[in-house]
Length: 310
Image (cartoon, rainbow, N blue to C red; front, side, top):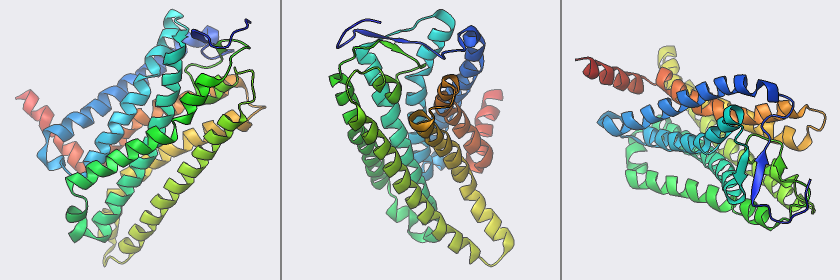
């Protein structure tokens, strides 16, 4: 315990209470990270290589893959260095940057899901106008808007975090510089930052989930109007991967954010383990879900392997 106002470094503790198991915990973490990196890089490669995948749906999928790669790569390598090499120190500026990147790209991903829902709505409810509305320039503008929203709305987090005096300790009881974990080290009232973070989490989630729900309500109406059961199943199947990805992506961060703020009786190691779930599991599952459930991606992947084998 020391007295300082602006530490040059923070110390990441890892998972308090499970230090003896760090080496073993790192193995599944590393496995999930490697699978996620390989899967998302494969998605980017396939979309770039295959002209048949040059469509809005796959452009949005590429944005999601980039976001997943950035979020996991800015946290997991440092996390593994803590578990395997006891590399606990992190520069103050690097810590603030990590905090900002994780939360801003998480916000971007939520916007990407809204864009994907819009794509599915137009493809099913207005198929003849889909290509004329979602042109490449419109897709680029949507991507820019999603990126700017994440960057601008989360700017107060690093700005305020740099202003707080840290006079308690520089030891962060976490595996990365998570916003709430950093705020707990300050010796002044940080409720404004905590409330703003909660406000953003609720408003962004509620707004984006509402827009997605409206899109799928219209999609379901269009599907139920189709004449045959096979047509309804086939059309709804095109939305299955998107719905699966939404569930995988929204549930862990919402649960983690709420338990970090209100789960006072929940063991700290459980909170930290679950906070790592949404950095590791969604980036790993996104390419798997789309690869398994999307015929065009499966066919493109098989063609690549077939060409490699000849």
